[in-house]
Length: 437
Image 1 (tube, one colour):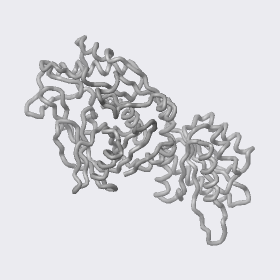
Image 2 (cartoon, rainbow, N blue to C red; image 1 turned 30 degrees about the vertical axis):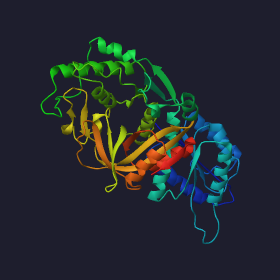
Image 3 (cartoon, rainbow, N blue to C red; image 1 turned 120 degrees about the vertical axis):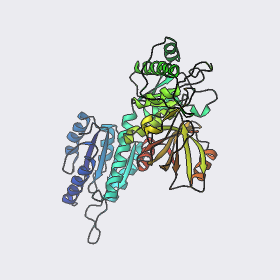
Image 4 (cartoon, one colour; image 1 turned 45 degrees about the vertical axis):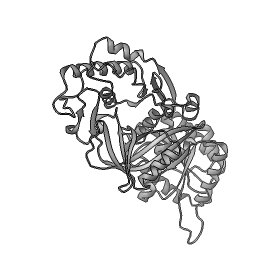
C-alpha cells in the first residue's frame, strides 16, 4: 500500500443519475489505487450533512490531496467547503456522458462551476475532464493526482545550502521567502567549514568502486583514491548531520583544490552522495535542488543536474553535461572513467524517455520550464556525465532559443519518466507560468 494518501469524493444531487456517477466513482477509485492509498466514501455525497463526516475522515487520514469528482451537477457550495476544510491541493474531475437522449448527470457543467469557484478563492487546484475507464483518461487523472500530492509533499521540505552560490552565478539566485510562501520549502544555511574542516582532519570513507579506470588509460593512483575517500567522508558527514534529502552546495572554489599536488577533487564524491539518496545541486543552486526534489517525488527516479552544452538542429538533440550526477544514472558501470587528476568522473546517461525541467526565478516570480526529451542510446565521452537528448515536440534549436531569449537559467534537470502532464498540472496547482516545449 502506498504511503501517499489521497482523498476521493464524488458529489451530486439525487435527482440526477446517481447510479452512473457511482459506477464512474468505482472506476476512478480503482485507477487511483494503482499509485495511492485512497480514502473516502464509495457512494455519491448529496447533502451538506453527508459531506461533513467525510471531510472529518479525510482530515483524520491526513490526505495530501483530494480528487473531487463531479458525479452529477452538485450543490455549488461543496467544492468551497472541501477546499476550506482540508486546505490541500484539489483535482477537480468531471466525465463525458451519453447525450443522445438526455443530460443525465451534467458533470461537465458542474465541473465548470467548481473550477470557477476555486479559481476565485485562489485555492490550488487543477482539473481533469475524462473517462477514467479509458487508458488515456486514467493516465491523465493519475498525472494530475501525482502533481497535487507532490505539491503537498514539497511543503515542509528543507533544502540544505552549504555556503552560497558560486561566484557570478546569478542564475542560482533565489527568493528565500517567496520559495517558502509559494511552495512551503525552507532553506537551511550550513557553513562551508562543516565540509572543509573535515577534509583537513584526514579521516576517510571508502569510495563505492572496486576499480578506478582513467579516461587517459590505466588506473587512479592509490593517493588519488585516498584523497577521494577524504572528500567523500567530509561531504557525507556534513549532510548526515542534518535530516535533509535536498542540498545545494557551493563546491568551488573553496572545495576544489587549486593545489596541483592534490590528485583528487570534490566532484566524484558529489556523484556518490547522490547515489546515497540525496538530491545534489552543485554551485549553490537552490532552485535547482528544488527542481530535482520535485522530479524525484513525481517519478521515484534519480534526477540529473545538467548544463545544456550543445545542440544539433538537424538531429534535434541537446547535449546534456555536468558533474555530480549519481553513477546509478550510467548506461553501463563498465563505461565509468575517472580523470587522471582524480577530479572528474565520466559516464554516459542511461537511454530512455524523460523530461528536462527547471523551476526558474525571474523578475520576482517563479516559473517552470518543461521540455520533452529522450536520451539516446549512444556513448558520449566528454569527461563528465553526459548524454545526447532528442527533443520530439520542439526542435532542439528552438529549445535553446527559448532558453537564451527567455533568459532561463543555464541549469536544468533531467529525469527518466513521462511526467510532462504531471509538471504542467503542478505548475497550475502552484500558480506558476509554465513554458512547455
